[in-house]
Amino acid sequence: MPIVADVQLRNLSKVFDGVTAVDDVSLDIGDHDFMILLGPSGCGKSTLLRMIAGLEDPTTGDVSIGGTRVNDVEPKQRDVAMVFQSYALYPHKTVQANIEFPLKVRGVAKPERAEQARSAAATLGLTEYLGRKPGQLSGGQRQRVALARAIVRRPAVFCMDEPLSNLDAKLRGETRAELVALHDRLDSTFVYVTHDQVEAMTMGSHVAVMSRGRIEQVGSPQEVYARPASVFVAQFIGTPPMNVLPPGTVEPTEWLVGVRPEHVVVDPDGDVDATVTLVEHLGHEALVHLLVGEAAVVSRVDAAASLPATGDAVRLAMPPAHRHRFDPSTTRRVDP
Image 1 (cartoon, one colour):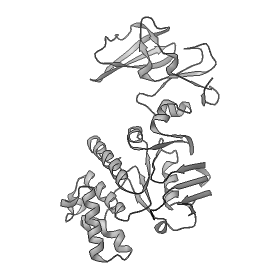
Image 2 (spheres, rainbow, N blue to C red):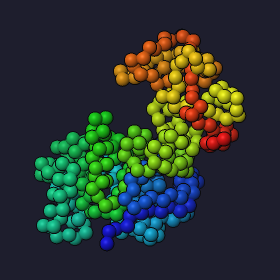
Image 3 (spheres, helix red, strand yellow):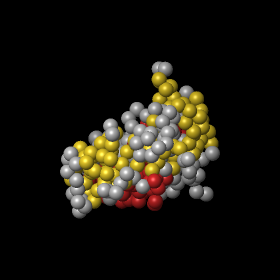
Image 4 (cartoon, rainbow, N blue to C red):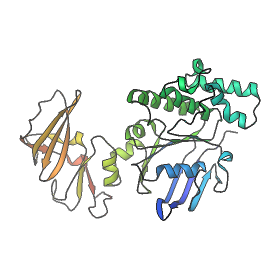
Protein backbone atom coordinates (compact mmCIF):
# COMPACT_ATOMS: atom_id res chain seq x y z
CA MET A 1 0.00 0.00 0.00
CA PRO A 2 1.23 3.54 -0.71
CA ILE A 3 2.23 5.66 2.28
CA VAL A 4 -0.44 8.15 3.33
CA ALA A 5 1.49 11.31 4.06
CA ASP A 6 -1.13 13.90 4.93
CA VAL A 7 -0.34 16.21 7.86
CA GLN A 8 -2.91 17.76 10.18
CA LEU A 9 -2.16 20.51 12.70
CA ARG A 10 -4.85 21.24 15.27
CA ASN A 11 -4.80 24.32 17.54
CA LEU A 12 -1.02 24.20 17.61
CA SER A 13 0.83 26.71 19.79
CA LYS A 14 4.42 27.12 20.92
CA VAL A 15 5.55 29.48 23.68
CA PHE A 16 9.23 30.21 24.42
CA ASP A 17 9.89 31.94 27.75
CA GLY A 18 6.55 33.73 27.65
CA VAL A 19 6.84 34.65 23.95
CA THR A 20 4.27 33.04 21.64
CA ALA A 21 6.02 31.89 18.46
CA VAL A 22 3.08 29.91 17.04
CA ASP A 23 -0.43 30.91 18.06
CA ASP A 24 -3.31 28.42 17.75
CA VAL A 25 -2.54 27.24 14.21
CA SER A 26 -4.74 24.66 12.48
CA LEU A 27 -3.72 23.50 9.00
CA ASP A 28 -4.47 20.54 6.73
CA ILE A 29 -1.67 19.46 4.38
CA GLY A 30 -2.90 16.92 1.85
CA ASP A 31 -1.15 13.72 0.82
CA HIS A 32 1.52 14.50 -1.81
CA ASP A 33 0.92 18.24 -1.38
CA PHE A 34 3.71 20.82 -1.81
CA MET A 35 2.81 23.18 1.03
CA ILE A 36 4.75 26.42 1.39
CA LEU A 37 4.90 28.13 4.79
CA LEU A 38 5.54 31.73 3.76
CA GLY A 39 6.16 34.78 5.88
CA PRO A 40 8.72 37.28 7.18
CA SER A 41 11.45 36.41 9.65
CA GLY A 42 10.09 35.74 13.13
CA CYS A 43 6.54 34.85 12.00
CA GLY A 44 6.75 31.28 13.40
CA LYS A 45 7.06 29.31 10.17
CA SER A 46 10.29 27.47 11.08
CA THR A 47 8.96 26.70 14.56
CA LEU A 48 5.83 25.22 12.97
CA LEU A 49 7.97 23.09 10.66
CA ARG A 50 10.12 21.88 13.55
CA MET A 51 7.01 20.80 15.45
CA ILE A 52 5.93 18.72 12.45
CA ALA A 53 9.37 17.10 12.34
CA GLY A 54 9.42 16.54 16.11
CA LEU A 55 12.35 18.84 16.80
CA GLU A 56 10.14 21.06 18.98
CA ASP A 57 7.34 19.95 21.29
CA PRO A 58 4.05 21.86 21.03
CA THR A 59 2.98 23.83 24.08
CA THR A 60 -0.61 22.99 23.16
CA GLY A 61 -2.32 21.29 20.21
CA ASP A 62 -1.76 18.19 18.10
CA VAL A 63 0.34 17.09 15.14
CA SER A 64 -0.90 14.12 13.08
CA ILE A 65 0.84 12.41 10.17
CA GLY A 66 -1.05 9.89 8.09
CA GLY A 67 -3.96 10.05 10.53
CA THR A 68 -1.80 9.20 13.56
CA ARG A 69 -1.15 11.67 16.38
CA VAL A 70 2.63 11.99 16.69
CA ASN A 71 3.10 14.48 19.56
CA ASP A 72 4.83 11.81 21.64
CA VAL A 73 6.62 10.08 18.74
CA GLU A 74 10.40 10.56 18.42
CA PRO A 75 11.59 12.45 15.30
CA LYS A 76 13.36 9.38 13.88
CA GLN A 77 10.11 7.41 14.09
CA ARG A 78 7.88 10.00 12.35
CA ASP A 79 8.89 9.05 8.79
CA VAL A 80 9.97 12.65 8.21
CA ALA A 81 13.19 13.89 6.58
CA MET A 82 14.50 17.37 7.41
CA VAL A 83 16.53 19.54 5.03
CA PHE A 84 18.09 22.61 6.66
CA GLN A 85 19.35 25.95 5.38
CA SER A 86 22.83 24.85 6.46
CA TYR A 87 23.81 21.70 4.60
CA ALA A 88 24.87 19.83 7.77
CA LEU A 89 27.12 17.45 5.82
CA TYR A 90 29.97 15.45 7.37
CA PRO A 91 33.10 17.16 5.95
CA HIS A 92 35.33 14.08 6.38
CA LYS A 93 32.93 11.74 4.54
CA THR A 94 32.52 11.42 0.78
CA VAL A 95 29.30 12.37 -0.97
CA GLN A 96 28.45 8.67 -1.19
CA ALA A 97 28.98 8.19 2.55
CA ASN A 98 26.99 11.31 3.41
CA ILE A 99 24.03 10.11 1.36
CA GLU A 100 24.27 6.60 2.78
CA PHE A 101 24.47 7.71 6.39
CA PRO A 102 20.73 7.60 7.28
CA LEU A 103 20.58 4.04 5.91
CA LYS A 104 23.69 3.03 7.80
CA VAL A 105 22.12 4.26 11.05
CA ARG A 106 19.08 2.10 10.29
CA GLY A 107 21.26 -0.96 9.80
CA VAL A 108 20.67 -1.35 6.05
CA ALA A 109 23.19 -3.75 4.47
CA LYS A 110 26.14 -2.09 2.75
CA PRO A 111 25.37 -3.24 -0.84
CA GLU A 112 21.75 -2.13 -0.56
CA ARG A 113 22.51 1.27 0.91
CA ALA A 114 25.21 1.86 -1.71
CA GLU A 115 22.72 1.12 -4.47
CA GLN A 116 20.07 3.37 -2.93
CA ALA A 117 22.63 6.17 -2.50
CA ARG A 118 23.66 5.89 -6.16
CA SER A 119 20.01 6.04 -7.21
CA ALA A 120 19.34 9.16 -5.10
CA ALA A 121 22.53 10.78 -6.44
CA ALA A 122 21.48 10.07 -10.02
CA THR A 123 18.10 11.70 -9.37
CA LEU A 124 19.87 14.96 -8.49
CA GLY A 125 22.73 14.77 -11.00
CA LEU A 126 25.39 13.93 -8.42
CA THR A 127 26.74 10.64 -9.81
CA GLU A 128 30.11 12.06 -10.86
CA TYR A 129 30.65 13.60 -7.41
CA LEU A 130 30.08 10.51 -5.27
CA GLY A 131 33.79 10.14 -4.44
CA ARG A 132 34.35 13.79 -3.50
CA LYS A 133 34.25 15.43 -0.08
CA PRO A 134 31.82 18.31 0.61
CA GLY A 135 34.69 20.83 0.64
CA GLN A 136 35.30 20.03 -3.04
CA LEU A 137 31.75 20.94 -4.04
CA SER A 138 29.96 24.19 -4.81
CA GLY A 139 27.15 25.46 -2.56
CA GLY A 140 24.53 24.22 -5.00
CA GLN A 141 26.11 20.78 -5.17
CA ARG A 142 26.31 20.54 -1.36
CA GLN A 143 22.63 21.43 -1.09
CA ARG A 144 21.79 18.70 -3.58
CA VAL A 145 23.78 16.22 -1.47
CA ALA A 146 21.69 17.25 1.54
CA LEU A 147 18.55 16.66 -0.53
CA ALA A 148 19.83 13.27 -1.72
CA ARG A 149 20.53 12.28 1.88
CA ALA A 150 16.89 13.08 2.67
CA ILE A 151 15.56 11.31 -0.43
CA VAL A 152 17.42 8.08 0.29
CA ARG A 153 15.30 7.58 3.42
CA ARG A 154 12.13 7.60 1.26
CA PRO A 155 10.18 9.49 3.93
CA ALA A 156 6.46 10.16 3.90
CA VAL A 157 7.07 13.87 4.57
CA PHE A 158 9.94 16.18 3.60
CA CYS A 159 10.38 19.20 5.87
CA MET A 160 12.55 21.87 4.24
CA ASP A 161 13.68 24.96 6.13
CA GLU A 162 14.78 27.64 3.63
CA PRO A 163 17.09 25.19 1.82
CA LEU A 164 17.89 27.56 -1.07
CA SER A 165 18.68 30.75 0.85
CA ASN A 166 22.46 30.19 0.72
CA LEU A 167 22.51 29.86 -3.07
CA ASP A 168 23.04 32.62 -5.62
CA ALA A 169 20.13 33.76 -7.80
CA LYS A 170 20.97 31.52 -10.78
CA LEU A 171 21.37 28.40 -8.63
CA ARG A 172 18.19 29.19 -6.72
CA GLY A 173 16.28 29.25 -9.98
CA GLU A 174 17.78 25.96 -11.15
CA THR A 175 17.25 24.23 -7.81
CA ARG A 176 13.64 25.45 -7.60
CA ALA A 177 12.95 23.65 -10.86
CA GLU A 178 14.76 20.53 -9.59
CA LEU A 179 12.66 20.47 -6.41
CA VAL A 180 9.38 20.78 -8.32
CA ALA A 181 10.43 17.91 -10.61
CA LEU A 182 11.57 15.90 -7.59
CA HIS A 183 8.20 16.38 -5.88
CA ASP A 184 6.46 15.14 -9.02
CA ARG A 185 8.60 11.98 -9.03
CA LEU A 186 8.39 11.11 -5.34
CA ASP A 187 5.36 9.78 -3.50
CA SER A 188 5.93 12.20 -0.62
CA THR A 189 4.47 15.33 0.92
CA PHE A 190 6.65 18.45 0.94
CA VAL A 191 6.40 21.14 3.65
CA TYR A 192 8.69 24.00 2.69
CA VAL A 193 9.53 27.13 4.70
CA THR A 194 10.58 30.31 2.95
CA HIS A 195 10.35 34.10 3.17
CA ASP A 196 10.82 34.30 -0.62
CA GLN A 197 7.52 34.85 -2.39
CA VAL A 198 9.01 33.84 -5.76
CA GLU A 199 9.72 30.38 -4.34
CA ALA A 200 6.20 30.26 -2.95
CA MET A 201 4.53 31.30 -6.20
CA THR A 202 6.57 29.03 -8.47
CA MET A 203 6.91 25.87 -6.37
CA GLY A 204 3.93 25.37 -4.09
CA SER A 205 0.63 23.67 -4.79
CA HIS A 206 -0.63 25.52 -1.69
CA VAL A 207 0.69 28.47 0.31
CA ALA A 208 0.05 29.24 3.98
CA VAL A 209 0.93 32.90 4.60
CA MET A 210 1.98 33.51 8.20
CA SER A 211 2.28 36.64 10.33
CA ARG A 212 3.03 36.93 14.05
CA GLY A 213 2.55 33.24 14.72
CA ARG A 214 -0.79 32.94 12.95
CA ILE A 215 -1.90 31.86 9.49
CA GLU A 216 -3.37 34.77 7.54
CA GLN A 217 -4.48 32.78 4.49
CA VAL A 218 -4.18 29.34 2.88
CA GLY A 219 -4.75 28.73 -0.82
CA SER A 220 -3.12 28.06 -4.14
CA PRO A 221 -0.50 30.63 -5.16
CA GLN A 222 -2.95 32.02 -7.72
CA GLU A 223 -5.77 32.33 -5.15
CA VAL A 224 -3.55 34.07 -2.62
CA TYR A 225 -2.33 36.54 -5.25
CA ALA A 226 -5.73 37.19 -6.84
CA ARG A 227 -7.85 37.36 -3.65
CA PRO A 228 -5.67 38.28 -0.67
CA ALA A 229 -7.52 37.81 2.62
CA SER A 230 -5.88 40.79 4.34
CA VAL A 231 -3.76 43.86 3.74
CA PHE A 232 -0.76 41.91 5.07
CA VAL A 233 -1.17 39.18 2.45
CA ALA A 234 -1.87 41.74 -0.28
CA GLN A 235 1.38 43.55 0.41
CA PHE A 236 3.53 40.49 1.17
CA ILE A 237 2.64 38.68 -2.07
CA GLY A 238 3.66 40.47 -5.25
CA THR A 239 6.63 42.57 -6.34
CA PRO A 240 6.11 45.47 -6.17
CA PRO A 241 3.46 44.93 -3.48
CA MET A 242 -0.17 45.88 -3.90
CA ASN A 243 -0.96 49.56 -3.60
CA VAL A 244 -3.33 50.15 -0.67
CA LEU A 245 -4.98 53.58 -0.57
CA PRO A 246 -6.89 55.27 2.25
CA PRO A 247 -10.70 55.38 2.27
CA GLY A 248 -12.12 57.99 -0.09
CA THR A 249 -8.97 58.23 -2.25
CA VAL A 250 -10.16 56.03 -5.12
CA GLU A 251 -13.87 55.61 -4.43
CA PRO A 252 -16.37 57.16 -2.00
CA THR A 253 -16.49 54.26 0.45
CA GLU A 254 -15.29 53.53 3.96
CA TRP A 255 -12.90 50.80 2.75
CA LEU A 256 -9.19 50.73 2.10
CA VAL A 257 -8.77 50.11 -1.64
CA GLY A 258 -5.98 47.89 -2.98
CA VAL A 259 -4.82 47.79 -6.61
CA ARG A 260 -1.96 45.75 -8.04
CA PRO A 261 0.72 47.84 -9.86
CA GLU A 262 -0.14 46.16 -13.18
CA HIS A 263 -3.72 47.46 -12.83
CA VAL A 264 -2.73 51.08 -12.17
CA VAL A 265 -2.79 52.71 -15.61
CA VAL A 266 -1.43 56.15 -16.48
CA ASP A 267 -4.34 57.43 -18.55
CA PRO A 268 -5.34 61.03 -19.38
CA ASP A 269 -8.97 59.91 -19.07
CA GLY A 270 -8.41 58.41 -15.61
CA ASP A 271 -10.26 59.72 -12.58
CA VAL A 272 -7.43 59.83 -10.00
CA ASP A 273 -4.93 62.71 -9.92
CA ALA A 274 -1.28 61.86 -9.22
CA THR A 275 2.23 63.25 -9.39
CA VAL A 276 5.20 61.25 -10.69
CA THR A 277 8.02 60.98 -8.14
CA LEU A 278 10.33 58.46 -9.85
CA VAL A 279 10.57 56.31 -12.98
CA GLU A 280 12.56 53.08 -12.71
CA HIS A 281 13.66 51.49 -16.00
CA LEU A 282 14.04 47.72 -15.57
CA GLY A 283 14.63 46.70 -19.19
CA HIS A 284 11.50 44.65 -19.89
CA GLU A 285 9.28 47.03 -17.91
CA ALA A 286 9.28 50.30 -16.02
CA LEU A 287 7.94 51.13 -12.58
CA VAL A 288 6.36 54.56 -12.28
CA HIS A 289 6.24 55.79 -8.67
CA LEU A 290 3.55 58.35 -7.91
CA LEU A 291 1.87 60.27 -5.11
CA VAL A 292 -1.90 60.22 -4.86
CA GLY A 293 -2.55 62.77 -2.15
CA GLU A 294 -0.10 61.57 0.50
CA ALA A 295 -0.29 57.92 -0.55
CA ALA A 296 2.57 56.34 -2.50
CA VAL A 297 1.46 54.35 -5.56
CA VAL A 298 3.40 52.26 -8.09
CA SER A 299 2.33 51.56 -11.66
CA ARG A 300 3.88 48.75 -13.70
CA VAL A 301 4.30 49.88 -17.32
CA ASP A 302 5.57 48.15 -20.44
CA ALA A 303 9.05 49.44 -21.29
CA ALA A 304 7.95 50.26 -24.86
CA ALA A 305 5.18 52.57 -23.65
CA SER A 306 5.46 56.35 -23.58
CA LEU A 307 6.61 57.13 -20.03
CA PRO A 308 5.97 60.26 -17.98
CA ALA A 309 8.84 62.17 -16.38
CA THR A 310 9.56 62.84 -12.72
CA GLY A 311 7.44 65.76 -11.55
CA ASP A 312 4.70 65.31 -14.15
CA ALA A 313 1.08 65.67 -13.08
CA VAL A 314 -0.85 62.71 -14.50
CA ARG A 315 -4.17 60.96 -14.16
CA LEU A 316 -4.60 57.31 -13.24
CA ALA A 317 -7.21 54.71 -14.08
CA MET A 318 -7.81 51.90 -11.56
CA PRO A 319 -10.54 49.69 -13.06
CA PRO A 320 -13.18 48.68 -10.47
CA ALA A 321 -12.88 45.01 -11.50
CA HIS A 322 -9.29 45.03 -10.25
CA ARG A 323 -9.88 46.77 -6.92
CA HIS A 324 -9.60 44.95 -3.60
CA ARG A 325 -11.37 46.32 -0.54
CA PHE A 326 -10.28 45.92 3.07
CA ASP A 327 -11.80 46.93 6.40
CA PRO A 328 -9.61 49.73 7.83
CA SER A 329 -10.08 48.53 11.42
CA THR A 330 -9.43 44.79 10.93
CA THR A 331 -7.46 45.03 7.62
CA ARG A 332 -9.38 41.90 6.48
CA ARG A 333 -10.81 41.56 2.99
CA VAL A 334 -14.30 42.89 2.35
CA ASP A 335 -16.47 41.78 -0.57
CA PRO A 336 -19.31 44.34 -0.62
